Image (cartoon, rainbow, N blue to C red; front, side, top):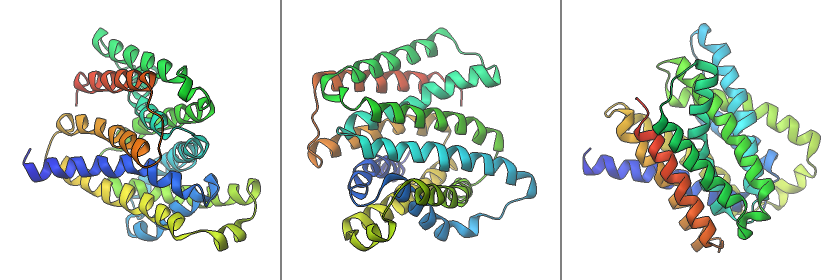
Length: 283
């Protein structure tokens, strides 16, 4: 890879990692379901031109929209809203990789060797260490919802693989198309004071909304598509491990999160296990 393209890969993961920090600020102004629904509404406005697809793709994309728009992202932002320590849930988000491998075995009869099983085991041990660390113990509900988000993400990854060659922004557009109305309706049923929330929301809250929508989704996914057009997935995938590192740094230095020995060891094991799986997964 050229140095400019390496820089793009690093910036993409910086945007993904900083999403957790931005969301934590936005969720101080907005309830989580309302926040996620507005986020998808913004994305839908920007990505409407990507919505049109051949008829045979409508049903698969609708299913992915439910999995990601209603499942993955909703539970992700619920997790961020509940978390006292954002660093731990950011690393937990990488469990989608071993989850995807496990689901591939269950649903697609894929074969995995002892090396990838080892990687899954290492990542799960790391997750257990984080879960029982005193600094994260109060965050068990947030960690639970992040694990649920990872399960949705892993299943969505399998369904996206079945799509074939579809532009990432088309997928994001359909996730927004399905997610926005469902989440906004859910918010109006289960959350309160929407008009008051809009009136009292700050420039920080709206900036967080736009940042998570535009920078973390549109810009980052466009950059990823740019790189995948030029390099094999196996060369790009290891860069994914940078996003939780950026999230941890932001959580510690911006949100004043506590970084304990248990969190460091657990995070290291998760990232090592995920990296081990990526390295030994055919692309």
